[in-house]
Amino acid sequence: MTLSSTASADASISERFAAVRASIETAAHAVGRDPASVTLVAVSKTQEPVAIDAALATGQRIFGENRVQEAQGRWTPRLGDLPGLQLRLIGPLQTNKAADAVALFDVIETLDRPKLARALAEAIQRTGRDPSVLIQVNTGAEPQKAGVLMADLSGLLTLARNVLGLRVEGLMAIPPVDEPAAPHFQRLRRLAADEGLSVLSMGMSSDYAAAIAEGATHVRVGSALFGERKAWQGPL
Ligand SMILES: *Cc1c(COP(=O)(O)O)cnc(C)c1O
Picture 1: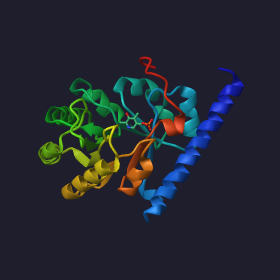
Picture 2: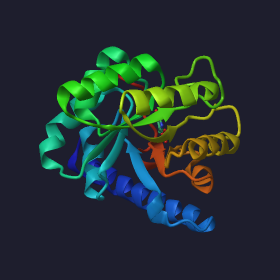
Picture 3: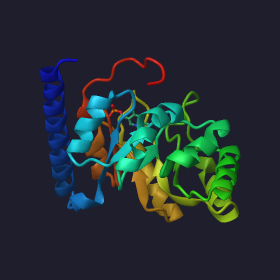
């Protein structure tokens, strides 16, 4: 990559971050919310180091990743230099990677089954690290999608929080791509209120304004910040 193309990648990423932050503010104000009550999670999966550098240069410190190994490769070399960095796992987690996830991530957003809750609790006990946890809810009951079914949320929450002692702070969802998202956001908000949970991770590049209108505390935004993703090309 030439110096000039690096510089222009920087410029467009910083412009995109500024635009997304501004529209988060607009969306919050539109429903009478304090913009500071909405946290921008920059989804850095598949991004090259130059793009990460550009994001960090804007002051961004909260990032979402959907694969444990890829995130280790991207972030482990940077951990020592970045006080305040917060890494959030937003992709499905296999139980055999639970220990690696606990070692790297500050927040695990994708707890969705008892076996994973037990694996996380065991890794937390063993390592002394204590990431907080969100439960992913499959609000559209899509068979191919991760997430606990709405009917099973209470049971999983009781196990995770009361029996295993995980720090469950809220809920996360990815609405079906082929349906309006707002009803799913409303559903997630109601579930969280019923369970006394305060964190709502919902909304992506295409629908974060709608999610903010429905109470999102964390929006997970990738392509609107970094540009369109290239196809996954294996570990970075
Ligand atoms: C990739 C991803 C996002 C970001 O998607 P964009 O449409 O690029 O904003 C958000 N949430 C999850 C779970 C993802 O995997």
